[in-house]
Image (tube, rainbow, N blue to C red; front, side, top):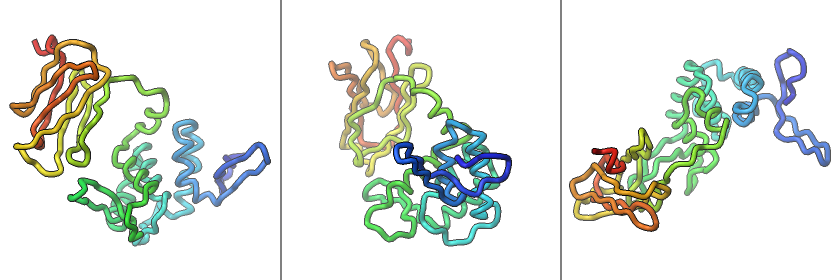
Length: 239
């Protein structure tokens, strides 16, 4: 990682190929992104690289607008939130808001960042980093990478983009869901399944006509096509 000695790093490793002994170095500014991959494995070393990259890119100063599209700013926002760097986070978030065209496409039910690229489809990798930053917070990237995720029942077969889930969270044995249709229409209905649950009787709290049915392929939830919160739990838990 080009961290020999105590001097501030001036380069970062983009990749190393041991078969042909090629070490691809880039200026340390590239560590705005490479630090993202190192952070869950070697947090101290990643922070050392990231601090040097921030100084090289002058992220510790007022940012020049408009920002150029790329991975550096989005991945830096992830790390600023990961490490609780509040001042940097605020500067980056304001710059992203001003330069990267956050846009709701209400016809498709999608939120994306155009990045100023004027492309038909938003750039996937750049949007992925920005979405990770939206979901990020202190220690979350490290926690996600530290161990395999615990297996739990899964919500599947959601009729996206006709309907989306803004929340799907298990808490104390209850599945809490937030449904957001593209267009509310109480005369229409939507269904989806929950797989991997324990066999037995389940109850649902939500719109008056929402139902849950145990089948060989999991729980089938049937509900009106309206914005609503639902809770799903074993019947014994409700008693």
